[in-house]
Amino acid sequence: MCFKLLSLQNCKRTSYQEAKQIIENQKKEFYKENPENLEEQAINLVGKDVYQKLIKGYTEKQWGRDCKDLPPFIIKRLPLRFTYDNNYFNDRYQGIPIGGYNQLIDKLLEGTDVLLNTPFENLKDVEYDKIIYTGAIDEFFKFKYGKLEYRTVKFENSILDTDNYQGNAVVNYTERDVPYTRIIEHKHFEFGKQPKTVISKEYPIEWKEGLEPYYPINDDRNNQLYEKYRNEADKLKNIYFGGRLGQYKYYDMDKTIEAALNLINEIEK
Ligand SMILES: Cc1cc2nc3c(=O)[nH]c(=O)nc-3n(C[C@H](O)[C@H](O)[C@H](O)COP(=O)(O)OP(=O)(O)OC[C@H]3O[C@@H](n4cnc5c(N)ncnc54)[C@H](O)[C@@H]3O)c2cc1C
Image (cartoon, rainbow, N blue to C red; front, top):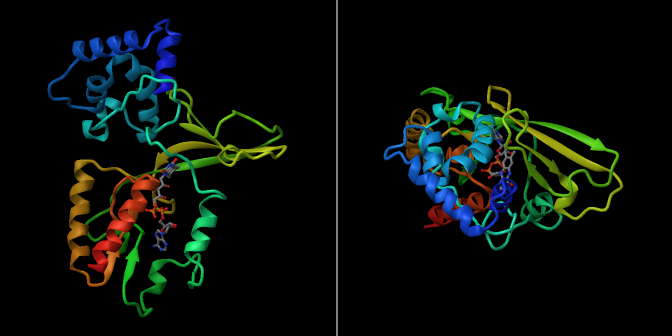
């Protein structure tokens, strides 16, 4: 990642080869055969400097737990890129649909009856051929085996009297003592020219009833509980569970779309 290379450079380590070598040396020096927590796992993958500067604070804010108390499997891979490309992902094409997702979804739903602000509970007597349910699977089954855990995000939105606050759509704050994980400046997604700007600070928090669940916490306890609900779901006819809440998996948009297409292929078989 570019910001890694730059931060290593700020520490007066200048060449790609040097940066690579330092990381390799640290990985060897601190390597743990069987990492017992996220900290050990992350150091195995990227060494101590990158872990301390970029992973530790951000991850602890995101999950609300010390990295030593988080299971290692949360981080399976930490791809390193020794270039100045500062995109978050390695994907060749990155962006959002022109006009935003609303425009895309509006067209997908054209000609369809849409009920907003209607809990699924209220629709149970409606006749249907097939249902694809994208709410929380534990809620669907009235939490009969217990509650799955989630993280959620509190957004603090402000309109600022400047045409450009941070020069970029997303800036991440990896330090532990900054309480938010990132600031979104929405106009930069669409190259907006407005005289003012809207920003959102994101504060990750624990989910509780009444809040919208965002991130599944896929630790052993929750995964085992999810499997129980999954078994119940498999017994139902013509009701399918989709998306990150229905399938209790953290999906980015591309994975959500891929999973949705896979589900439709399954259903149509
Ligand atoms: C803060 C944040 C930032 C993100 N940033 C990115 C990013 O930069 N790039 C990226 O690729 N992905 C990002 N994602 C992930 C992306 O938003 C998800 O992958 C995607 O929205 C998942 O789609 P979904 O349909 O599974 O779930 P959702 O989009 O959550 O849709 C589920 C819908 O079901 C509704 N629902 C739930 N329960 C009920 C019920 N009982 N009755 C009626 N309706 C119900 C919900 O209100 C919701 O509208 C981000 C997620 C978050 C939370």
